[in-house]
Image (tube, rainbow, N blue to C red; front, side, top):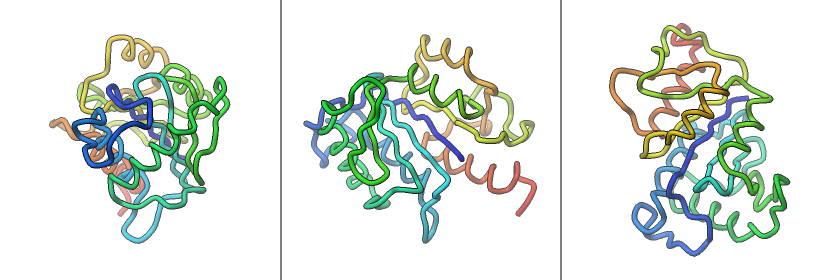
Length: 198
């Protein structure tokens, strides 16, 4: 299983946002939607062995489960509609018990720390950061959980949590990449056993 945790610092926590202005009026929800697309879509298929956790303003987590996903299309607007539908059910989420809001999509009432604690118990935490160890020097981990930020840097308190939880801190190259592009590079890294098998 491959997992991705993406922190959306300004992401909406209510469904009252426009699908027509994801970059402006929806707290750069467009970035998170592109991350979902990069995590799941192949040319003519969906990666079923992937799970994505979107942290919405450290208040809610929307999880996409590749093996159960339905109605996910490779465009930002339809992905944002699934997130909005999840937020419409937020009152049904009690504590850390998830509520399934559509096939393969669920919402929990927890932020970054709770989500990180949960995934750390079942996987190898890898922080993606431009100051990390070069990815070519790091063996692909088993059951990796890649943690990355949206268009903002990690906040200080997030860095502290990651320092406590992360097994690796990895850089994908000499230039900073967009979050969704980073996910594509990570998939190639894993698909090729660390860029060794093509």
